[in-house]
Length: 308
Image (tube, rainbow, N blue to C red; front, top):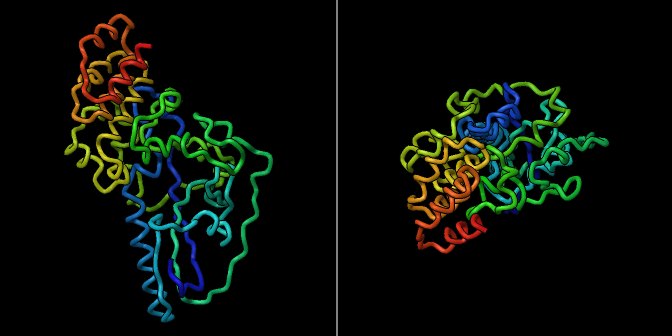
């Protein structure tokens, strides 16, 4: 990556929440958004902080510097553990004695030859709370994550339809998942984050699914301006919201899903089919299906699977 690097400086920023992230999961017609995504995009916030520190370091030492915030193939969590910021817990995320599970990580690569810090010993013990709470059983073993089953991956990175066998387990989680982080016992030592730009926007604390599912592309971009959510794009986001609507048990939301059967995106239309199959009485759903003639193979497959 950078052949002259002699040292890596790992840094963490606390983003501890001021409310229990798991409480929203009981509000089935509201959306659960991961704590880290409710404020400004952490990539931008931390990058500016790191660049300021790196410039100071370079100006005072003459060493060359380069900063990374989840922007390159940097093994941030193992490096942070090696540098004494914490240890990688059984959920594979970094755990800090001081901040629990709520740390953003960034790094400064430098040509300076700096003294090394001591690694933090693993203090998970026999605890397996993070493994047992995972809604989709994404941990085949301690310290191993199957990203294909992880709700954070599915709602943010996965570009196609959500696998059908995992949809019900997603509940109302529409962007990320905090379960394995929030349940960690080391969070009893955590404190609320103090960076104002990372603080949760009030509108993103518990937004209603009915409001979110009506967003067009322009409205989506406006609402999530400067957040990491914007990177996902409107279609994938609405896909997630429709899965949550299907899990809500709220039949009044069926009208929103039915409206989206005519959406321009096949991804959205397919998710709408699944949501309707969960909310409508069987006879009404079958009658609706008989009136459909979608041209997209993936959407037709959703109808077939829902009618089976």
